[in-house]
Image 1 (tube, rainbow, N blue to C red):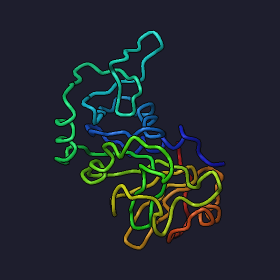
Image 2 (cartoon, helix red, strand yellow):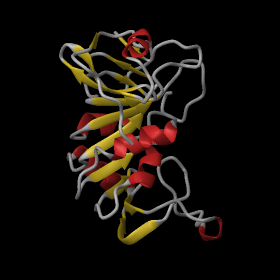
Image 3 (cartoon, rainbow, N blue to C red):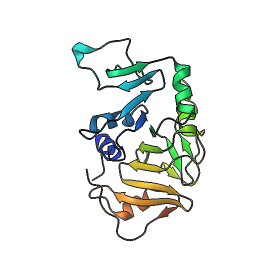
Length: 218
């Protein structure tokens, strides 16, 4: 059976390392904060000007003035820092973010990402995604492997407007963990109960399968 959104987030949390500065995009990526390993010191950054994001607040602890870039109400951990958006983007553009986790509409087998616009639908704009994908030291995409019509979102070439070119390093989908290599996608792990053939069938882009592919451990 494929992973749900929490399963994807839990697997991505295994990519974190002590002392990392991490930016989590809206959607599935925000769930990664729920699975940070106990005792690990991770600093979460939001491009609207907060370093040190805490857990989501309980209903009686909501502060409407304290939000992340996705307009979700949040909390701040002791020692958190607040600053203006220009300082936040200087931090991002200066390469001080160790890991960025983003959602995506499409990813190509050369690491291109389309994550901000579907033609014909209203959007608020690209936001900070363009700066994040251009500057982060490591970029992991959290996404569903196929769209609601069952069509692959891991493609030879993205069909939607690009957010970044050749920037994605790893993808964690509901079906698999996949690395982006110069030769295309490389299958690293498969979701529990999901066969290699199912992943091949769901992937339009070039897919390298070498040896036995282990199941994802959560």
